[in-house]
Image (cartoon, rainbow, N blue to C red; front, side, top):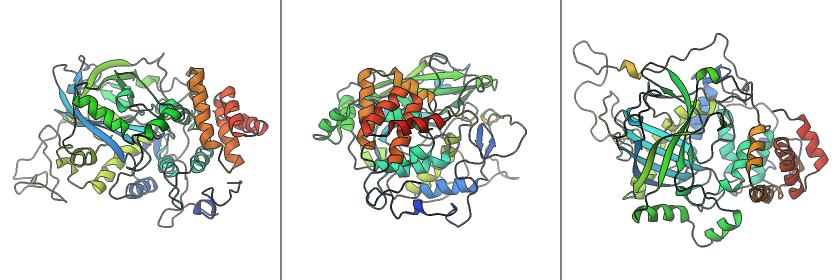
Length: 510
């Protein structure tokens, strides 16, 4: 790291300080530790990237039986109704018929820490909705914040590890967080600005939004594609807590958000969110100074305004917490083929496969038969047996095709969209347009003076105790690159060297 940290800072005598080549668990060298193998420079992770797949598979098996991420959660049942007919954009029936009430289960969560933490901690909040449509389960698996820390899955596991307690002391150590974020070179600046603002502690689940973070594809009957970003906009409005308000609340109640949600539902004050979308044509993807499929970026609302297309209402508390909220299994890979599909977003591509693996390990092979997960429509397949099978398998046929038996047919309308690929070679490389700092600066400047002060104070509360001047100076430089006032205020608050900060910032590239 070039900057030695004394014992007690969480870094001394750890494997992370050792010299040598990074390898897999099997001892083979990793050729590129920062980038997944993708089909094009825009994305499309390949299954032959075994380093990526093994890393995700290993990560999904780190904890039993608690979720590795999103462990602390609260859920409720409800329904969704579309406002109008969206068939011009997508074949998904539940979005095109206002008379349809689509049943759903919604789970809110804290992302990085364990089930035992208070609901007032500063953390990203998960926002997941399992919609049981007539065409199968569609899972919206997002967060309250619209962007994320990294754009390539290779460092997703590292982000979670850094936020989780030090494996030696079992204490959360923000030196570890800022060490990683500083080493990433600035791509986390936008997300850190969100997280350490008051948006990092929502006042309640009812008063926060849910964002898809990634772009997805809507496909209509003519096989025309529109890229979309989705969000659940709270109709109660957005309300956040300051650090001081959160501490005062935590002193009396570790479960304030769950209690508030359940009390509102029991009292008939049903929480509501409006589903809104941004739309972008495929030919527009290269029109910007950033990559629209980069998870660290949002789409400017002045160019791509959100449009409301439906509403979700939560109106039922689950009868048993474990059976429903703990056993629910979401996956962004649960979409409606031919109607809603994933984009080439590198981070999304890994999530499409890793969630299935995580829940298969955590809940079991037949997790889809648990009532909270079970589709509303009839299922027909040839999967067989497995742990906790409850009688799905009937008759002699568990294969297809067959010469003598009638078998299920396929549905051409559900074929995946044939995404054209440019000629070229496999690559492991950074996105061509990263724009690490500009949107973070715009976000800072959009805050009120009170919000800016809270953001700086929240960052300073964690950074000031760092035992590394390199971490202090580097993180201040990232914020300075986003906005000179922003970085200068952080640097002053934590005692970073202003001259050094400016020199580091001058070398940073967008």
